[in-house]
Length: 212
Image 1: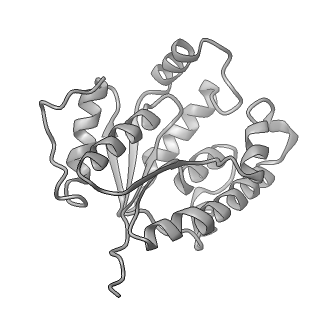
Image 2: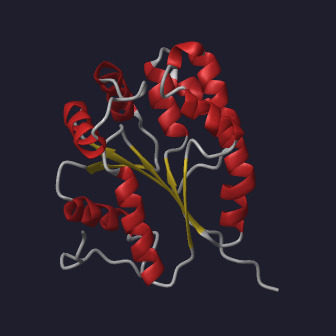
């Protein structure tokens, strides 16, 4: 029996309000129209540790930065073992909203060493492509407030997002590609398709593709 060709692993990164979740869904739709198997997933997950992380949205001060990082690592380890690695091995393409680069940026902004954070993830497979969608923190705050209409959570404060943005900008890894997130959804989508073209030859950038 022929072993399945491993799936492609793409992660979407960026500060809150950058539009990564929307762009992930758009790419997933394109891949499915090409007949490619796709799983959409996200971090933090809905698992035990993911739920503990979501409690921090209201008050991050209940844990130290190191304790916060440990929660993310435990959540990610389960995610990798239970979904990401088995899916890729079965030939399913995985699109993930946030991964360990977000830990490097967000927990790095809280005072930890981003390089050491990345080194802690030797258990986690590197993505084939990490798309960092870039947008000014001030604009991201405006998008969050206009979209949700409620108070910013603990991870979305402007001073913190500026630090996070600075760390994302410093990340220099072979699988990282930066996307200008300031344009329309359609413009950003086209930039992303250009980056995935080599990974999915059947997916071609199209200036005529309609995007909501």
